[in-house]
Structure formats: C-alpha cells, structure tokens
Image (cartoon, rainbow, N blue to C red; front, side):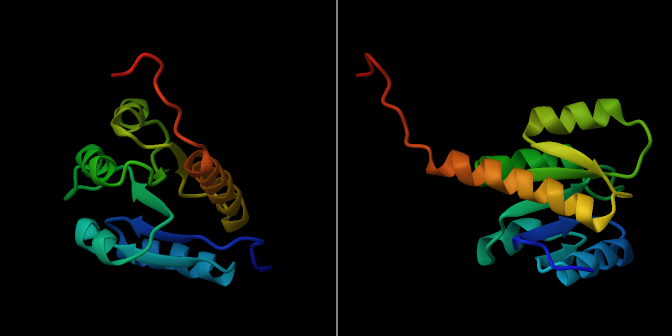
Length: 140
C-alpha cells in the first residue's frame, strides 16, 4: 500500500478493539498515527495531540452521543467522524450529528477512501482554524 500524502494523528474509539487495531494498523501503513481504544478518551485527549477523532456509532458500553457532546464541549474544534457498521442507523447518525459529529463513514471503506475522508475533514478543520475571528458589529 502506498503511503498517504498527508499524515493525521487520530484516535479511534470502538468497542471492538481487534477491529480498531486492524483499522489502525492499516492506516499506520499509510503513514498516519492512530491510537485505537475502547474507552478512556477524555484522559487520553488531555495528554495527546489528536487531529481527528473517529468514534464507533454503536457501542453497548458507551453512549456515543454523550461522548460526542462531552468531547465537543471540551474540544470545540476537534473534528469528529462517526464509524458506522450498521446498514441503516439514520436516527443514531442524526443524533450524533446534532451532538457535534462532523460526518460519518462506513467501517467497510477501504483505507484509501478513509484517507480521503480524513484529508477532507482535516483540511476543512485547518482552514477554519486559520480563519480570523470577525468582530461583531455593534457589540458592546
């Protein structure tokens, strides 16, 4: 597999650690830094640089919407992508998007397509971070 033209440092939260490790391994081969985990995200984020957070949509032990809400409150600009293995989970996806997720992808995506998604999300995030804050007209 050829290495990606960019490198992303991201965390992958999934209740299926062997699957998360396999995905992380595949993406590491493409030049990314990825930490797969089943929990402990809040503490991990306090001590590590993370450019993109990838979160499994359906985890029996973790409320994904609550996890996204809490993460969004502490890290307002951190891009959050949902990983979805379900064929049709429209309600869950919409709830997670309302909570602050930036988008979603299928777990069955080939690594090069996931690369493309990560690239677009990271590019948009970096562009937003460089945008100067605009003064509010008439603000006191």
